[in-house]
Length: 521
Image (cartoon, rainbow, N blue to C red; front, side):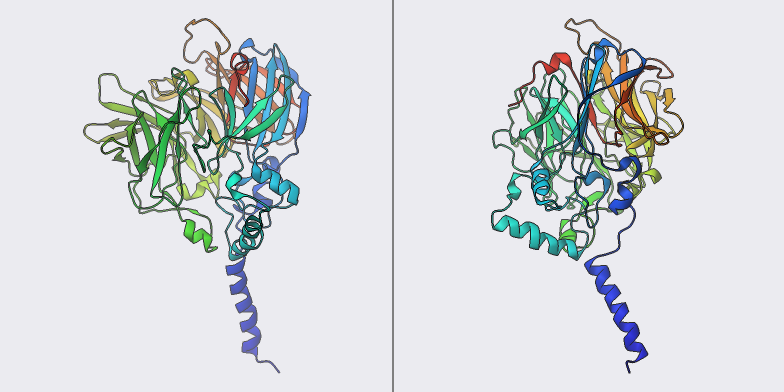
């Protein structure tokens, strides 16, 4: 007869081994909880005509609005956070009051490999090695397939699910774990994935999902963040998409820091270094996600010359900003007559909840003044509201701007409304909520003169703010066009979307004038 001690020890030992090999999933990383409700994935939809159900569409909207988002094509048997699903693009093609909706997966190498296999093959960047089971699966399935030539990991491991940008006459779907993918929206409204863009083999692994496009020079400024490196690499492209030589930007500490977004001004580039750090070797041992919070680390802002080169002495200068964890950046500019920079961004507190429960994060919009001579950084909170995912008039990127439009956080990227902030008065001057059970996403500003050929000067806020909005009670989605100048952000037009549009990430508007100049090669 077995002893009572033995009968207790075996289940206990089994539980310990199981927790190491396959640790229990918290709701924040369990796909069945993460991707539910209007976060749940949808299938592709062919180009479909939409109905304008309110108001009239302004001629300024002739062109394409396109938004990216996380939409897993295959069910993951393990950990997965919201930001790691396959990229799906949702587009609206506007033409003189007519609207065509379409949704397509970004046909990344990862997407195509897993579609053919019928199962996940390439692990996620952040949560793909959450337990030892994931490590063994990677070795047995992914690494083995790579060794025998079934898959080629050098062709990309990313999902291109984060944002959309347009530069060098190309529309790009971006995700920071890979290179961008060139996409196109046809005249008929269909979305096509053209290819992964390696810039004539001058860029190997990845680049930020938040490139900064200078309206005046048409140059694009970007950086590459490597979890195994003690520095990131900053570089830029000319208006033709030709990559310029990059320069290393060393972090202020020895930890590999996660930098998601940055800002440019006329002379500088500014990088917010938060308390997020990479722990890639911890992840490779099956001990959780590769990203964690170092509470002993003091956040900083790093500033380098906009056109820095490797011969510059002291390439980056760091400024201490205790307690300031900025992930997304609204804008920055230099103060005339002062050796100082204004930097506008939401602060994320507590930072550890950004990956766990965004409804528990307080996103506080702050305006910081950086004195380049003394090193002093003064900060001011612009609103007591919980604000994230903002936009400005794109003509004012890197220049002194007055207005910013921010989403009111419910559970980022799910937003309950929209606010307009006056950066000169340093207060909220406009607000609109989407209604009971209705939630939108990141706003996008469309200038009233987006399609004009002349140089008529418009006021900075003369235009429209647009976003998808979903009614969780009725299950219907629509696209709102709001008057950016009005205090109540009045609805100018509303378009009924022929299917549910899940909450997503970042998008952009491309005018018809710019669509005609696209090169999809």
